[in-house]
Length: 67
Image (cartoon, rainbow, N blue to C red):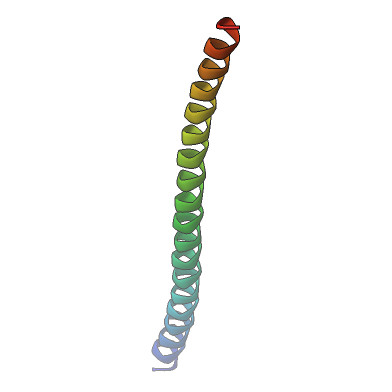
């Protein structure tokens, strides 16, 4: 009977540790998703900026050719 109780206590301790580890992993995964979203937003803004700068460069080149 004591062995069974010891085994149950050990298993309950393990389960509690696994629950804590799982919660930490879920939290880390959520943080990664937030970071990913922020990086995607920055990349989109960067692409738009590069496109606008390219258009501005072409405009300047056209303007300078006309002078």
